[in-house]
Every structure is written in structure tokens, then in C-alpha cells.
Length: 138
Image (cartoon, rainbow, N blue to C red; front, side, top):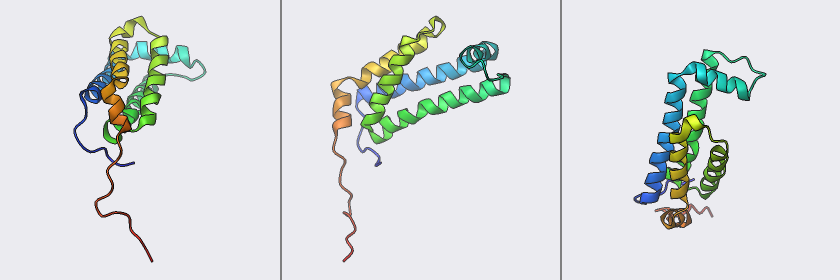
């Protein structure tokens, strides 16, 4: 993948800010109340013995995983990441936790910004050819 050149459209900047804020909010809320986060993980994955350390690891892993499509979209304009975010964002909104309403709102804003015309042009752009051109060996 090549880095996308040029300024990012407003829709992509809104997506990045909202998506990063939602991921940070989830991480901070989890770290602020480890007992609640631990019990939430235990409810979803009861076969694993959750303790405070594993809860911190899981929260950090979720944050890191959220950064991957953010980088793909913002730095590389990868169209598949757009659909990945939209799919998983829809699942996240379907399993709405009333305690995480702010995060859900941020995810909804991020998803909506990916469906704008500006974002469509961003993902449809044609990468610039390399300056030197491809190497030819004869």
C-alpha cells in the first residue's frame, strides 16, 4: 500500500477524530472501572479466568485493533477498510450498551462520515504513479 497524498477531506478527518475518540473513550472508561470491564468480559467469555491484568490487556488490544482500520483509511485510503469499519460499526450499534451511549454516538458519526460524497471521492482516487517509474531490466 502506498501512502495517500494530498490533504484529507473533511469527511475523512471527521471520521478519524470520531473513531479515535470512541476508541479512546472505551479504553479510558474500561481502565477507570476495571471491575465493571472485567465483569463485562467475563459475561462474554465465561470460559476464561478474567483478572485485572487480563482485563487491561484486553482493553489495550481492543484499542490497538481499533487503530488499524483508522490508519488504513486515513493514511492509505484503503476502500476495504471503509466497509470493514461500516460492518463492525453496525454490529457494535446493534449490540448497544446503554452505558456507552457517547461512544455509540461517536461510532455513528464516524460511520456516517464514511458514506459522504467526499469520502467516496477519497476512496475512488487513483494513486499517483511513482516519480522514477518502474524499474525495467533487459
